[in-house]
Amino acid sequence: MFHRIRRRVAKPSEAQRRFFELSAQLQDQVPPGLGGPPAEPERSEPTVAVDDFLPPGLRVPSHDQLDGRMMPWMHPLVLDGEMVACFECGAYRDWLILSTRDQIWLRCREGHQQQETRLDTAWYNRSSGPADATHATFEDCLRHLGH
Image (tube, rainbow, N blue to C red; front, top):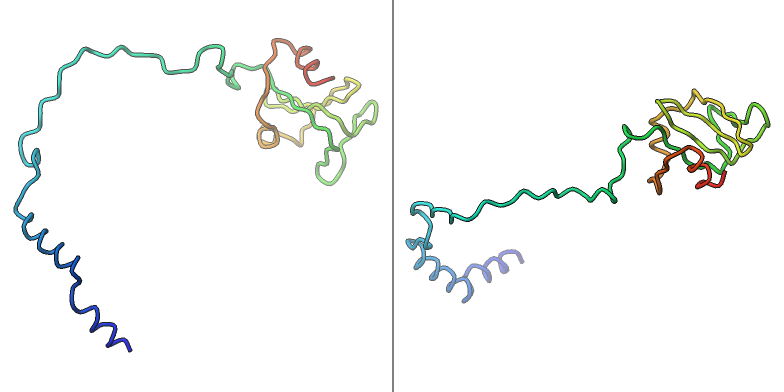
């Protein structure tokens, strides 16, 4: 069976034959511009450097320019198998998680704050989404997040 297939393919088709003839004719020809000296670049006026960065109104401050960041955390926060609760009022959900100066702070709905040493900035960066706003003061940010 394979011998029959090979025998059929042994003769080149008409398209293959024409391709071989054309390639034989073009073999010694060189396209224009190849092999010659490189063309001189056209002289033009110098281009003006344009600042291609975003306009100031659209720029987002880097983490170095911010005093801190915060995000809401509506669900209970479980660390090392235990649920974190507020030391003063006992609240265990609806936190604001603050990241400032390589420290993580938890703030309950009542306004009590406690440092959480089991969390770090890397955890915050993995868990937080993109920032939707920047605020000049801490109180403005609290108001924006509904606290």
